[in-house]
Structure formats: structure tokens, C-alpha cells
Amino acid sequence: MASKQLSLHHLVRFPASFQSQEPTSRYPTILALHGRGSNEQDLIELAPHLPDDLLWISPRAPLILGPDSYEWYRVRVIGRPDPEQVLSALETIDHFIDEILSTYPIDPQKLFLLGFSQGSLLSMCYTLSHSSRIAGVMAQSGYIPSGLDLEIHEATVKDKPFILTHGEQDTLIPIDWARASRDQLQKLGVDLDYHEFQMGHHVSMESLAIISTWLKKQLG
Image 1 (cartoon, rainbow, N blue to C red):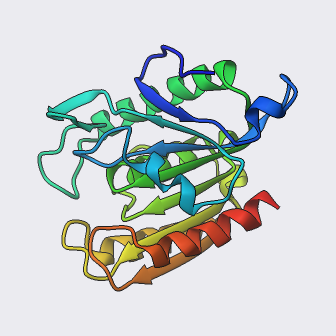
Image 2: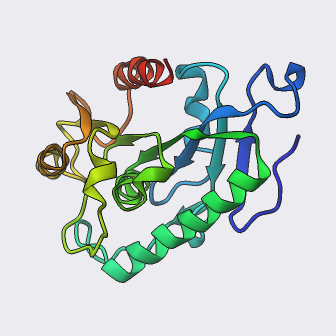
């Protein structure tokens, strides 16, 4: 089963058991949102480091930044994204989720978001504002910006699983921004795992191992 033509160009990685299962089988799924300047080929390469038998869907952000380089919203000043552009990006993601749920064999109760940097910001903001659609969030090297008019449904956000990983030496998105996001999520009562690592604006084998353990727990 190849990827279909939807509103966002994307890659799909099917579980190893896909061919042997019944056509009605549904799979836990990771929707991977890449960072600014990257593309759909980036985060899907993390699949071998996370639990097996997951369906992966990795879309390309719609805005061109350069050759093979894309972004979800335009950035003028890092740390102060334009609220209207962020909300528009969230609408783009929401529409794409509608499409993939009707196109691919996704278990709608086990749809997880995995983000890095700009994609991490959107993963957290999307889940806060559309919490009933997402089973949990893996947010790497991201933050929740201030000044967004997000409609947060606190009853459904409460106890929602989040894991945040961040580098203490991150010079692009400072660790203090991640800590402020941690504090905000704790006030909302989410089920939060928060981890800092000796690294910059990256992922590492150590951070991926922590995420893998967390995800195994969520999958039961």
C-alpha cells in the first residue's frame, strides 16, 4: 500500500505485520511533524529506534524555505511566532488528520504526535486544542509560545500523556523556554514526563531511548 495523494505530500511506513493482517486491522500510528528547514524524510528515520509494529506518517510542511527545506509557518523572530500563522498551521494539520484517518488503517484511539522544534511546538499546541484526537505527544526541542488564542479543553487535556525532551545546551530554543512549557503543562494537569539532556538542538540515542520506553508504556 503506497502513500496516497492528500493535501500534504507525505511518506508512510507500514508495520512489518501489515501484509499478513486482516484488511480491517487498525494500527497505533505516529504522525511525525518535522522542524523548520527540514522535510518529510527526517523524523521517519527515527522509526527503528521506537517500538515496532507502528504505522508512521510523515508529512512535508507546506511552505518552501529552500531546496528540500520547508516550514509550517514563517519565522521572523524565533520565540515570537505570528499567532495567526500558527493557528493556520494547526488548521492544516487538523485537515490532514481528517484525511489520514479516512485513508490509512489508523487506530483512532492510538494516534500519537511526534515533533521536533517547530513541529514540536505544533504537536503540543495541536494536542492542547484538539486533545480528544491525540493519544499522546512526543515533543523534542520545542516550546509552547505565549500569545496564542488556543481554545484549551482542560477536562480532556487533564492526564493527557506528554513527554518533552530538550537539550540543556540548545542555543536555538533555550532550555528556559522548555522549562516554562513544562510548568504550563503541569498547571493544566497533563500526564507529563520531562527530560533534559547534555546536548544542543538535537535528538540523541539517550533521548530516543527515553521516548521509546515512554511510548511502550502508552501502548500497553
